[in-house]
Image (cartoon, rainbow, N blue to C red; front, side, top):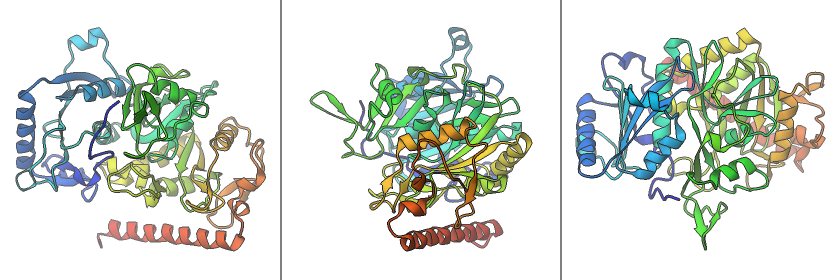
Length: 474
C-alpha cells in the first residue's frame, strides 16, 4: 500500500516532447504536447541522473507489446522500489534467455523526489514528464503517481506504431469462446477494466492495445484498475487480484489492518496494479484476432444518452473523434468531486503525439475493411443528471453488452432515439424496457428534452472548436 502524496493523478500540463529536427513536423504540438528545447531536456536529464547516482537505484527491463513483431524493450531506472515493482507488474517480463541479451530501445529515468526548476528546465513547475524521441529517453521528476510511467510508454507506442500500419488504441479488449474479439474505447472511470473483465470472455488487456493486420494485441502485462468503491461481490476478479501478494494499492486506505476500498478521503482516483495473470479467464499470450466489435464507452453526466445503441460506421467515427465522456474526480489533478463533461478525441487525446486524424483514418479503414459492429454504451447516469439521477447498474450494462457481443440483438428491432440519431434496441432480455430509452427513465419528459438539447449544444460547440483548430484560427 503506497501513498503518492501531492499528485494523485496525471499532471497533464506538465507533459513535454523535445522539439527535435527529425520529428518536429510530425508532432501534434499544442496543449497536449508542449515543446521542450533539447538544451532544457539535457539539463533535466543530467540532473535526474545525478540525483539517482547518489543512492540505491532499482532497474527493471521489460517489454511493451505482446506481439513480438511490434514490441519495444524498455528500461526503468528509479530510486523507488515500489515504482520498480509497478513496472514489473504492468509490463511484459522477459524470459531468462531474453534478459541475458536485453538491450533497451528506450530508457525511463525516474526521479520522483527531484523537482524541476522552471527557470532553468523550461517547465511550469517542479513536475515534468519529458520525452526525447532522438535520445530515446523519458525523464519523470516531481511526481510519485505511477500512472505517469504507464502513460509515457503508451504515448511512445502511439508514436512508433502508425508508420508500421498498426493502430494504437486507448481501450480494453477481450475475446469470446468463438474467438470473437471486442475492443472497448473509453477514458478513465468509464468501465474499460470492469467490463472487459467478464467471466464469459477471456481478457486480452484492460487499457492499451494495438490493432495490426494480424489482429489485436495488448501493450501491457498488467492492469491498473480504478478501485474506489470496489465490491467483492460485484467485481470479484478485480477484488481478488487487488488483495493478492504483489499487488500495489495506490492511495487506498486501511483501517485497523482492513483495506477500505470505499475511502476516497485522499483521492477518488485510488488504484490497484497487478499482473494480468492474477485474473482468471485471460488470453495468456495477450493476442487476439481481428476485432468483430468496437464498443465506445461514455459516462454521460447529463443522463440523456441511452445505455446501449448501435452505431453506423459514420456515427462510430464521429464518436471516436469526439470522445465525449465525463472526467471522473481524481483522474487528473485539480478536478472536483462532481464529474465534468469533456471531449477527448480518440478517447485519449492526452496520449497522442501525432495529429488525431492519423488515428481516425486508421480506425475508419479497419471498420470498413472488416465490417465491424459498432456500439455506444453509456455507463454514466440515467433518470436525471449526476446528483439527481442514478448511475447505470453494472448488472444491466453487462447484460446489454453480452446481448450485443453474443449476437442476441441480431434480430432485434432498433428505433431511432429522436435526439442524437442513435439506434436503440426496443427490447433486451433482463433489462427493464424503460431504461433502454432514457427519456422514459426521467420523471419529466420536458426536463429530459432540455438536458438532451444542452448536450447537443455542447457537441456542436466542440465540433465548431475542432474546425477552428483544424483551420488554424485558434
